[in-house]
Length: 384
Image (cartoon, rainbow, N blue to C red; front, side, top):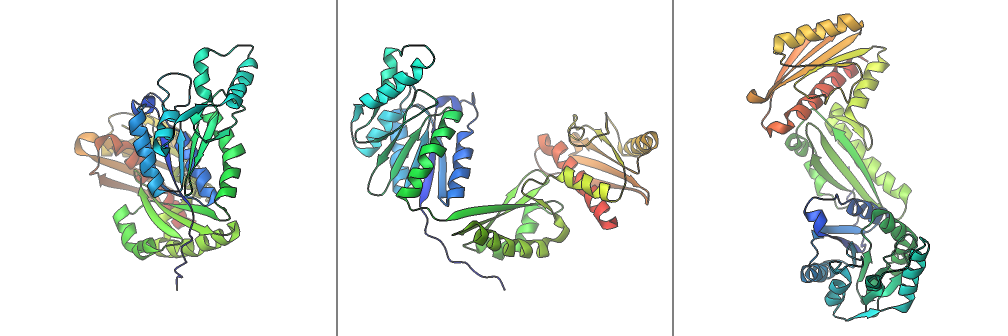
């Protein structure tokens, strides 16, 4: 009998990344993921993340909305010295205050720049301007001080966008602040179970009741040929969270059986190769139409082109004979037909499998590869 765990009351947070260069795809936002993982480990519920371009009023509007939903609002970016670094003014508008120049922050900027043997430019004084009444946060690894605007309910935390600066300040200054301000004594732990062989809809049918639990929570995420089941537990200690996760994990595994091939950092190709190794077998593979996708995953893969189903099996036979491998498999995709062919030879015989695909054509090679890897995994595990 599964228990429905009580729901912990924890502070909530939202993350706002600032920068037109992110919206234009010129740089990849890694800050959001890092902050999200940090908040999770602190036991903070993350409600929403958003990216805004360098526009003061749009940023201010987003901050005001986040302050209504969440206690903690974290922004990254827009703290540089140029006129298009809008975060200070935007946070001030959202908080309903003016901005002010802080001499102590300017001294930090000057000190940091002097370590490089330079004098600060006049425009870098902007980096010592913060919303009135804000808590200044030292940046020992860069020239942009961070700051915190406090209200009775909220903490609006503005961090630099440069990842190494953001991470240093987050861990050295912001985490201790959050722990003290919001009395963070809980943790959130997550276990991700990786599944193959059933689609998201079929997995949902088997564990739908678990997805309604409040704590731990259970959710699904579909990838190309792989579905993840995420189990997240909130508790007062890591040991308690792990215990809660283990109870639900046992139930998920009991219902899904061999569909679950691994957890967390496990990868389908690694699990498949481990299953082959346990049998004491060696392996060779053949791919056609995958542009080296399988070869990057599996050693001893032969890449060929334009193999019809019969030619694929002939190529698998030839690769096995040439390499003296115990097991050989191959996969060939046919984009025009949205289909793929798989072939497998083991010491116990030969078999083939034809599959059709209804998704986007560009995903066909990865989908076919993952289905082929899982096919071999299941076969090997059945014989072990």
